[in-house]
Every structure is written in structure tokens, then in C-alpha cells.
Length: 266
View 1 (cartoon, one colour):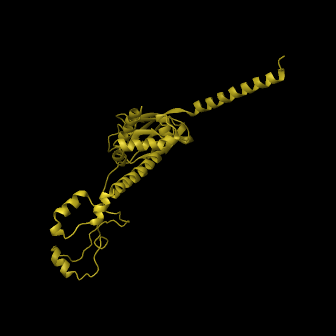
View 2: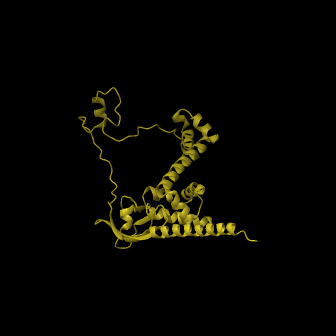
View 3: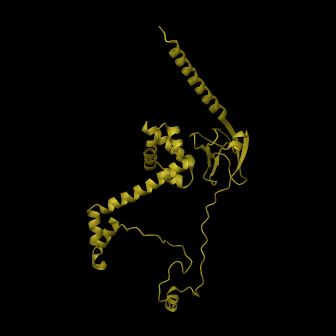
């Protein structure tokens, strides 16, 4: 015989389960919408600007008039980026989510060099004469004359093989060999040092790229696990022009390179 109470309990549980799923699905659908927008700036070409939903992984570009459409939900993070503008980051709050159309004003990216201030030191223009008449006992550094200079900890210099060959050929003039440099070349120390520096730069760049686009962008766009994102980004860095394109804020080429790299893996 059928246990009626047990049967009714199971039926009630199944009904409640499906009602819960329906409620979640309905809320998600109500939250999702297509946001229409326009990039505004009077000085630049507005077509081809990248609009990236960092949360969902979707992306699009603006048309000739700077207009775009992209799917969003509340709390999504939108990145607006191009080589000619300063990147903008928008978080979809309640107010922005309610809008059917909005305009985003962007600033043009201008690569300007820092001003160099040259301090007067009563110089005549004749370097030798100025050095003799300077009466400076302590050597002048770049701060004294207003010239930018490196103040950090300097890395160990790698003596190239060409330099060692040249010093060997000119041994009578140079007066001696750099025995330490020769040993470091023969032992493979310099090779390991170069590789270590290259790996450190790639590691740092990979972290910067993941932080910029977000983990969700890579997991959703390329259907990879969260634990695989770092290795995927590092592979893209090693096999494409991503390092150069990312540093120059050319995110269109960065995304194209990731797509190409992903297809090559398949």
C-alpha cells in the first residue's frame, strides 16, 4: 500500500522546489536588460570603443556615432576602454539600471611627457670650462640639475657575450678579463637570471590583466575554471602581443589575441 502521508510530503517538496526555481528564474529575468548608451567626446573618433561587462564576460564595440548596446544586470561592472580615451569603469546601480538610454562622457587620452626643469648654475656652455670653474667637490647628481633619474635599487648588470668577446679581442688594451662574467656565462647563471626576470614581469602583468578584466570575464567568455584563469592568461602573454597591447591600452587587440590563443588551444 502507498503511504499517503509520505507521498504527499514528497509531492509538496517537489512543488516547492519548482516554485523556488521559477521565482529565481523570474527575478533573474526581471533583473536582466539590454542597456543602450552613447559615448560622448567632441575630439575623438567614437567608433570601435570597447564596452566590456566585466561581471558577465560579454563585450561589444560602439558604432560610428559612439552608440552601443550590452546586456546588464544590477551590480555588474562595465569597462569602457580604447587607446584614445582614459578608461571608465561603471557599476550598474539601481538608478543606472532603470535608465533605458544614457550618455557616458569620456576624456581623451593624451600621452604627455613630464616637464623637465633646468636649474641655472651660471654655465657658459663649454662643458670642460664649466667643470673646471664649478668648484664642486661633491659630484652633482640628477636632482641638482633638475633631470629625472632612477632612485630605486639597481639590478645586477648582465654582461653580454658580445661584450666579453670584444674585451677578449682587445685584451692588450683593456688590461684584463672579467673572470666573474665569464664564469656566470659558462655556468648558466646569466641565462637563469634573464629567465627569472622575464617570469617576474610576466607574473606581474598576468595579475594586472586578471584584476582589470575580472576572473568572471575569463571563466564566462572562454568556459574555463577559475583555477585555470591564471595559466590561461599567462599562456596568452607568452604567445601573443598582449603585453605590448595591454600596456598601450589597446584592449581591442588584447581581446582578439585572447580569442586567437583560445582557439589555438582547441
